[in-house]
Image (cartoon, rainbow, N blue to C red; front, side):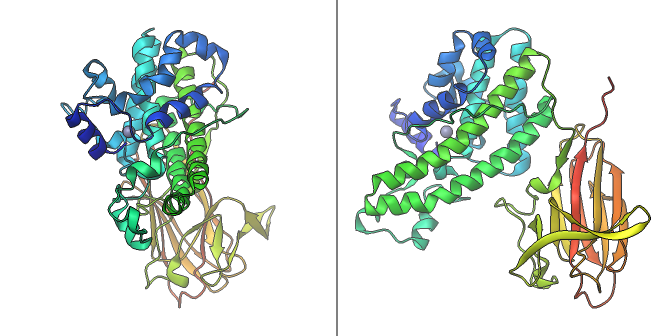
Length: 426
Ligand SMILES: [Zn+2]
């Protein structure tokens, strides 16, 4: 729910729930329904309250003062209504929000305070639900003012603020037999993985905005509800993983195995504030150097698989890669990295085997602005494996620049970029 809505409601002294108001409870209950029985038993009487009440705490900070502290952050003393809990902000800010409330919930559970734990869980669920809500996912256009310029409304909608209509509705949400996933074995990493999931959820919610608005304009309620439900189901899956992970970490039960590596190309670069890859500059090359995930652009439109010349068993062969980034030169991609979670970064850097024969690119990996490792690779050489320690690094940058020549073959590939955790030992 928007800050504006909440403030107006608070001023009016009403308790009317707007926003993903009723849907907050519906989505939270859909998520809870997929969690294992032991978690339900552990939460006891708080379980029902989490799905009907606690997930609304951040919207009710002015009317339920006794619970307001469960939606406040130590880093923002005195701020009772935290806008960040309702609207996604920058990735570092979003990460801090997730880490804080995940951490608070886990800590409360570990000392047996299930009452507090369930309230923090409610706030965490609310945050994820709002960030993946269609009315909250258009940057800087919370009331769809700009949107109405792109999609001019028919007369009855001319002066209507679309925020409420876009998110209000009576939805049926179920995520069926989907198993909740344990995101990580520490709060910091769980929050970081949750950030990536929330980014995907925000992007998925955006895909529903135009269908919802067109449905409103034409009076097609079914179309509106279908599109809203699609976003809500996506959000419920993310909430399920978040709560499942919080309860596992809080219960300190033996945890299921979690991955030791994270594919960096699954993350959103910080330059791409609207959650994709940054647009290429006109002066970059080839074809604006536009970065893509999992493919490279042959001629600005046609995507082809990432492939590199690699050295294997004494010979050089061509190999395709399912994960990685295809880009041009003058490309800098910066990533938020949680300090103290990952130990090393590794990547295979080189030129696209089919397109880059005449290329010459310098690949550099920077941590907090310092070069950690670098290599210059030409199109006739096999790709180079770059591996460097990243302990303490919070900003990891992949930079591809021209190594000389005309640049026409500078189809640069960062294949299998991985954040790797340290071995914890037996
Ligand atoms: Zn809200």
